Image 1 (cartoon, rainbow, N blue to C red):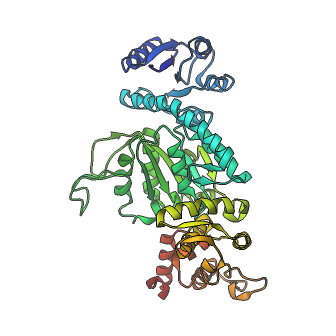
Image 2 (cartoon, rainbow, N blue to C red):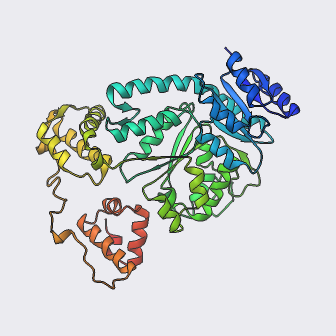
Image 3 (cartoon, helix red, strand yellow):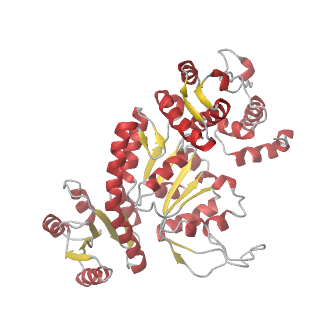
Length: 458
């Protein structure tokens, strides 16, 4: 059955032109000249998709969008916006619009948006199934938990996954930010298309633009052939920009333009390419502090942060540890051919007493090692690393403290803290970076700046 599309536009030529264009793609179309007439048509014609202008007499697009929340039927709403009204379009997506497109309308992009909106109907059914699974098992995609914090996150994911809204995922290292991004992708109409994740902190500054936007042959020394960037690889799918605060400011400027215009230009190219990609971003830093420090553009933050999902550290929802552990053990049994059946109660007590500074990633690593050592049966204390949990300093233990006299400069204090943390981890830079809340790239740069011998040793 062909999907019904209602076109709401006050300008007669534009209204009929859109109707003719969309019907030519196989959709059933009807028209309305403003929001008041649209509500009447929705009631008697029951469309699946609404294409509405923002600026109209009697009732504009934003008011219409707000009124749609009072009716039972779920519609995929695509907003038409004039140049310079991007902020209004973004606001409409916060209110539940599926996507927006600038005037004059690009037919290729509109056709792609409508195809994605059509898939939203199927996605809504998948969301309903996922909602039932959460209630029964505490599992949403690869996310696990029954605590209040995790249920709130599940509810937000269910609401925003079907739409094309940008989402900024924040939280400490190891809390599962990429898992959230994958779940948003899996519960969207884009789930049959690519999910591409790129870690901005792991790419040298000289290569990051090429990695993200692509390049033409000869664009720079070593560019021996044309290469598609992450945006093109994620076409019609989802792109996760992890550690967005580590992206150079100049690249952030170009990214903002791509997000607003939905076009990109490969390095060395004179041709702009239309893109259809949902962009998600993640960071383990406080984004407002990153803005204040000049590491994150203010306007890019607001463009990406249409919705924010903040992943809680594991120490704040320890009631989920048993459920998460069960899910990890099942996955590790399958990966390593083991048959571990569960965890001894005393070990779960140890897990509950530990603060898990590495969060769920640390729990996964501990359990993977334990499952492999155990092989079959029940996990016990004997399967944990020697000294597990002993890294927590006792009250008054000065060996894990950094003391500095009044008058110590900020730079010197930072240096002492970094070197002391690195010492406490046995020169494990990845672990030290997680404890300090900085990227591994930043840690390496700091050590190089200090001229520390630790910079050369692993």
